[in-house]
Length: 360
Image 1 (cartoon, rainbow, N blue to C red):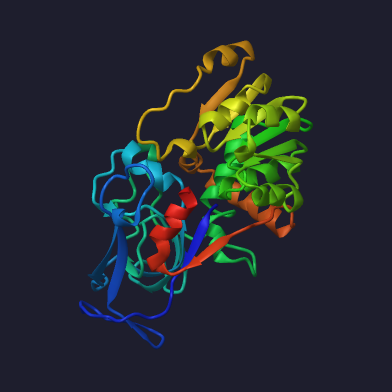
Image 2: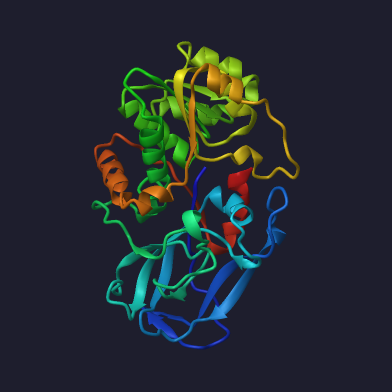
């Protein structure tokens, strides 16, 4: 499940570097969550530390941001160790924030931005600077950018979900890599998550039979009864391979993989000839503390002439196509063709707890 956090009210201020006035509130400090070390197994609260820092005076090109929503996402669990982030570091995460004050013409006061500067509270940032959360190369997270313009009445929290990175992950990952055709069967694992729920709905819009894999009866019922999936498989109830065969009696043409592991092996064993697999994540193994052996996939890949491709959604940003996905997702939301489900946890101080819960 994708989580969104909203900031609580005023707090006691101690150190003073510069005081900013916003309405009746004075701001002189910012907070950020620090990831102290690489995670070993499931993250625990002791892996994080809340730091308080004075807010500096704005310099040329800088802006003062006040977040409205933060996100916790599975990629933040695996990116640091996979892409060589140095510890300690600001914990990875995105936010939608309002620009309170500005010395940057591209980001006027009162506007909103989407920032991948990590779990920061009120903060002074330079949109052109490189922060410790960004990373490098093909996996680098985007710099601070103006928020995508939303239709009237749409919550800005969706900029971290359906109308943001998860939305484009579902849109491009499914349509570009799996290329589903009307009448085909699409299976998506992690189907109750931020990306999975959207993958299934997009596949239905393309005329496909859709099977979602999730954990627990409540999630499975939501997929079928609320989101229009044709069938749902509860991986906690037994053999996934057998359950998928029953839910997809004509075989699987497209598989959108969010989880990896035994679940994905069970799906792949049901693939049709020339099936396509988009590998978005492997969350079932993110907290493994030792290597896990799985059956070799090459024989079935060859026998059924399957195509499997992993991806990072940022490739479509580098290609200049980011808004293409957001515009289509926005249209579907406006038309009521794509539904949103958000889990909101209040309070910046609760980000580590929300992150751990998301991974459980």
